[in-house]
Length: 186
Image 1 (cartoon, helix red, strand yellow):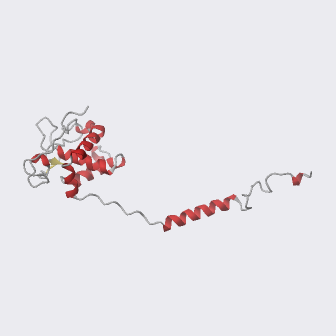
Image 2 (spheres, rainbow, N blue to C red):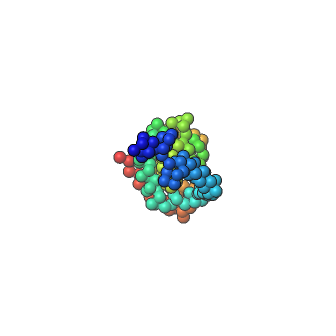
Image 3 (cartoon, rainbow, N blue to C red):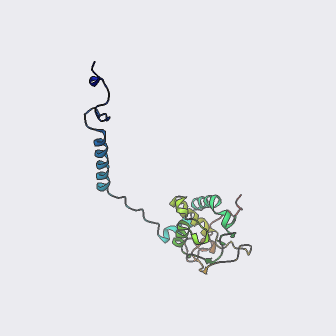
């Protein structure tokens, strides 16, 4: 058998795909096809953030507040203390707030963090619903300051809609409060 008739790769060392088309043509076709799909495929609609009234309603939902407490215990106790009294981070039980006092401000503050003060952007570590639940739990701590917390920081911005204030101007009937588990976190 002559040397040039032996089975093996053709001249140039490239083996064609069964159809006889070089492999790189298939790769180019795949890349072009995927690029065309990416251009033609519509971008997903962004999910809108809850409105202030929707976020306030979460404070009255005991299951949401309990979920927020579990997120708090997992991620927040080191800086904000076992019951929100503050440690290296600010006290969460008083009427002074560093980045605003509405629920939307609280959600934004948790989600975006405060890198200048050492707080990470939690939206990269927890889901949106967990950020909302955490905000509801923090709101439920309002009115529990007993003088043992860290010295207040920020701007005085009382939040009258929080349930522990008895519901005046808020989402619960006057005199009704959300029961919050204030047992120190482990």
